Every structure is written in structure tokens, then in C-alpha cells.
Length: 170
Image 1 (spheres, rainbow, N blue to C red):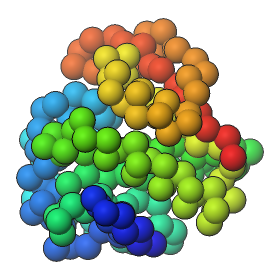
Image 2 (tube, rainbow, N blue to C red; image 1 turned 45 degrees about the vertical axis):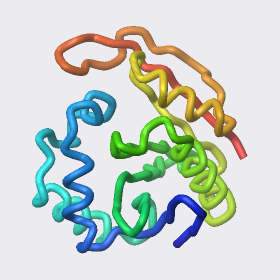
Image 3 (cartoon, one colour; image 1 turned 90 degrees about the horizontal axis):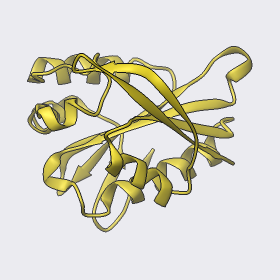
Image 4 (cartoon, rainbow, N blue to C red; image 1 turned 90 degrees about the vertical axis):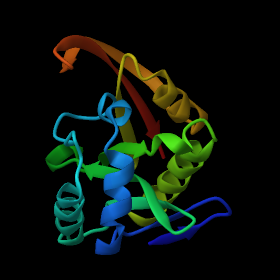
């Protein structure tokens, strides 16, 4: 899959993206808004390991956001299984230099379109930490609706926090 837009390209990861991914991912402000399995500090070997893992998957579920040829972020889906196999979680991060430029909303819209038109997925959902207002706004601008706030549902930086769940149904 490759989607080319004026300001960015969504494409599969390749090993040549490792330096750029590590550069942009090694940021505490990004780590504060993602799951703990996302390493911090984030070094080139972390990027190489992730790229290798992604490229071994049978289906395309993870894409890099490339600006001017450089990988500056990621967006991916996590298909659910068994009776929930028509649903997938969507997650993303973007290098801080590219925040507040309207880029991520368009990226999410492109991924939604791709997923709904090329996979059996009919429902996307996204859990967001209570403090990540910018991500909630991205989802809302992309048509997602907040469906729940799970109180004290997660822990980040040793603090118990709420999780805000958003969904979009095809």
C-alpha cells in the first residue's frame, strides 16, 4: 500500500527508515502518549527490530508517515480476533516537529479509507490517555465518536489515568 499526498506519503516501512524513525521516536513527549512497550529512549536498534517484526507479518497493518522522504511517524491497526475479528484498534504517533499542522487527521482519514475498502474490518477504535487532548481532537476530526471513558483503566508514568475510547463504524 502506498498513498501519496501533497504533504506526506503513507507507505510500508523499510530498513532504510531506521535512522529517521529512531530520531523522531526518541522523544519523551511521544512516549508519554503511547503504550509502555514503545521503548524510551528509542534507539536505532529499536527501529530495526520493529521494522523487521512488521515486515514479517502476513498482512499490511503498519505504515510509515514519510515527509520529504523521511519517516517521521507511524500509523497502524491491530486487528482483533475471534468474534471481534471485524474490529481493529488504530494507533499512531508523529514526530513532534510535525505536530499542529493538520497532518495526522489526514493520515488517519487515509488509513480509515484504506482499511474499510481493503479489509474485512468494519469498526475501528482507539483508546486515548486522558491527557492526550490533541489525539482525541484528531480522531474527532476524522469522524470518530467518543463512546466511553473508562475510569482508572490504565497506568502511565506511575499514575492511574482514565482511557477515552473512540470508534468509527463503516
